[in-house]
Amino acid sequence: MKQYRRSILSALLCFFVVIALNFLLPRLLPGDPVAYLTGFAEEDMSPEKYESYRSALHLDESQGKQFLYYLRSLADGTLGYSYKKEAVVSALIGEKLGYTLQITLPAVLLATVLGLFWGLDCAYKRGSVGDKLSSALNIVGNAVPTFVLALAFIVVFCFKKRLFPYTGLNSDGVTPGTAAYVLDRLKHLFLPVTTLVAATLPSRFLLMRNTAAGILDEKYVLYARERGLSKRKIKRAYVLPNIAQPFITMVGMSVSTCVGGSLVIENIFSIPGMGRLLTDAIYSLDYPLMQGILFVTTAMMVLAIILSDTVCILVDPKRRAGGRA
Amino acid sequence: MKKKPYFALVLGLALLLLFTLMSAAPGLFTDYGLKDMFPQWLRPSAEHPLGTNAMGYDVATELFYAARETLYVGLCSSVLCLALGTLIGVLSVRTGVVGAFFNALINIFVLLPRLICLIVLSGFLGASRQNLIALISLFNWVGIARNVRAKVLHIHEQPFMEALRIQGFSRLHIALCHVLPNLSDVLLSRFLLGVNSCIMLESTLSFLGFGDLYHPSWGTMINFAYKRGAFLRQAYAYLLSPGLCIVLLSLSFYFVSLWFEDRQNSIEE
Image (cartoon, rainbow over all chains, first blue to last red):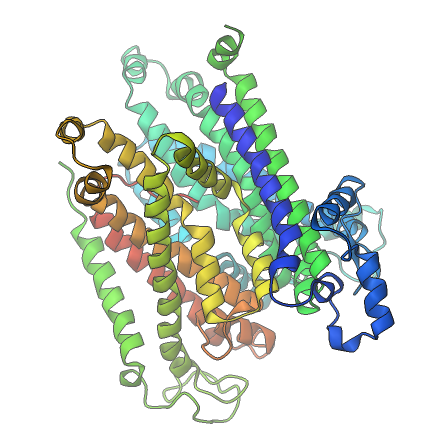
């Protein structure tokens, strides 16, 4: 109980660190904060323009006041204003977030569930040929950077075999709302999601395999085997409940790795999600937008961790009892 | 007693030796200079094993010269990571405010979305080799710190620590002369794995365009290849060979680290 509360606490702390970082970065780095917060070079601005930005950004007030203004912009959900794109940051992110989630959520689910069952299976058959092969495959897979994997997939599946489209989320000329549109979208999503799953699966697999292997060494598993219980029964009734917590924690942590991975992948597959937005922001030096994206991704991660820890407490009878006592 | 992975060690060392040689003397591997011009987009052939690129440079030559940059950034940042991780790991075990602070620091950095922070920070700071090294080491020490913390907590339970405390040795003396030597195996294997993750982060950032353009690494090469239309020219060798090198390099560190490690479950995020 205590352990979970502490990790929720550190997730929240982490959130505040990112907020503080967002606030301090443009103000502490060498250079004019006005330039950082608008994204324009200060030489290009007329004095009047400069003054109007300064007062619009509240830079002429005390640091404490500025921080309050910043917190207010987070609280009312605008997250600041992008002068480059002339739009509110949250609106910009809002319209792209959906695309990123379409890649991230299936990838998180697939990678963790595949990792769980594959890892469990290999742990059960430890030392067999299948286990050795899968482990070796995953160790090699763990050494492949996500973007290399994405490029290799594109070369093989899009250029050599021409099986899948390699860019965008939909082909031209397909009307939204029809069954063909959904199919087309799925076809476009297949490769990005597969890449992300293949990139994040190895570490999940190895973690699950080693956790499960540790539990299979326990005496009660030996006893269950001696009683002649079936393999399925042992896995379901003895091993799964015991690796449930590390598994759920892992799902929570996966969200942030998958969002990170999807930022890279979106660039390669030309998907108009947050990753594209972030690269755009960086190339056009749109600092408020960058900060907004960092804030939103951190918020997602913190949410995932709090959620997974709550589930951990809920599924564990020992912790529930301990909490009441 | 488990069999020691001789094969992995030999393979890892051989690969490492190859890459070290490549970065020490890239001239040995190729007849061309880095800026020798040829016709653009040549197909792979006997003269140009990987073809030529958009500028007409020999890709294989570029590949050999980039080994140095990749290794340099990877090694520098992982040495910094090691120092930072050990320091914070040891400090976090102390009782009181100091220990609590560093422990909280570890817990926070475990959770930070590393890649996104790195991308945004490099956006703010601009692309250069020094920035890359500093940022990578700033965000990558936490794995080492956690392992060090666990090991130090384990060492603190040992009887010889009690004996040392009873004999009245100072805390600094105990930390430097008795705890640190006992950490060496953890540090070595974590260091080797740390090089891995540093190289991964470096190549991802370089691929996204935060690499030092004056010192192109393998990630930067892939970035160039991708940006300048290697797909449409079907120059797949140009596009994929640096990636293969990254994989081989990080595998070689992993193989060597297996030797220094009795557990196999050392791969983490």
